[in-house]
Image (tube, rainbow, N blue to C red; front, side, top):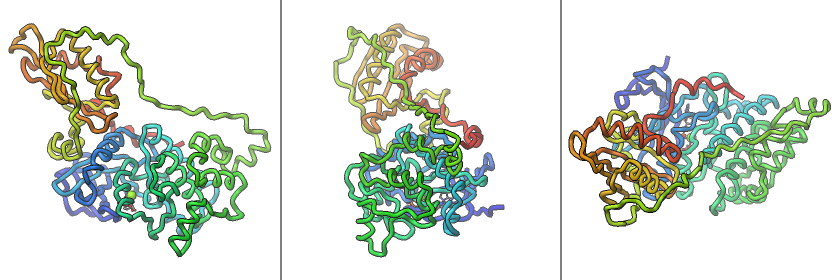
Length: 455
Ligand code: ATP
Ligand code: MG
């Protein structure tokens, strides 16, 4: 039994300290409502949130809230108090994977299992546009069934600020896991940088030590940037080949995840060598790309009946603090929580503002709503015919998180609530369906998440 002491936000009993990171501590916690074990990562706001980062953080957090994968530590909720941000995340009971490696290199089949799980996690997050950029031992955890769980996915913005502070580190204060292009602080491709780090992880699992090491930090940087490493002789030939392709210092020629997934060691591990004798190589793995549907409605008409001045509707940009204050009770995820009964509905969209606006205009036209006002980030729509409580008026406000990530708030500003709900649920929601990334309240079913089986 975990001993608990403090209660956080009336929702979580806080237990023992699980670990300490650069920005704060991680505690064991237990939900007072569901009794579920969680980990709570506490971060000092002032240490991390500078304005230029806030947008990134919010964008990635919003996406992370939607990511469910058996090998990714799930982010359950984010809460904030005046000085702190609390990430409530899935608890990994088995602790850090590398505590195992500290006892010696792993057997090939065990390393193979972990590597497959790691690549599966990374591939999945990349398909959703989330990059880790800080894959390292402390972020690779195990659950009670010895399955790998990558933590801190989507929190890379925090890692970014750490880099700017020159605090790039691993346990031993070296950039052992970081791709050369990241060290050089050039603009880099998050996907390729993650592949490099996965390569280092694979090396460590099979070798029991890091590929790039030197007591002199400068020498170590040099080795990393040249991709200067040597595989121990017990590495199978196909692993050596894979290692060279993953630890290619040139991100442009570095192997992609799709190709990693197609290589024989990835597919079969140690068994691959037997299978080869049996004449494998016939199988081709197809790669599944998940792109959110991008079908545009071509029926947009320009002869819209517009009463208001044709002022451009430019979304208002929003930062982490705005989002926190928009959300109820300092609970950041409140912005997504059930509010069907409320006057306002919020959704996020990965479309540019122009697409959102023209879609809202189309809806207005179809529903015979007049556009009464266009202002910065705001469209005011009004019904021409009077309803039970005067003319129904609806405001749609668009907040820019990034140019391709918006939060849109739709709310009733006048008229009958029932009529508003009818129009919202029967007309507006369906008509927005293909541009909505997520409506608040339509998020995670936490129970699902535990049930996904391992590959
Ligand atoms: P950084 O600050 O760069 O992220 P870090 O990964 O060491 O470094 P944290 O992410 O704050 O820091 O985690 C600190 C330690 O807490 C981890 O090394 C791990 O041992 C433990 N820990 C983190 N998340 C969990 C979790 N979900 N379940 C169990 N233990 C965890
Ligand atoms: Mg971490």
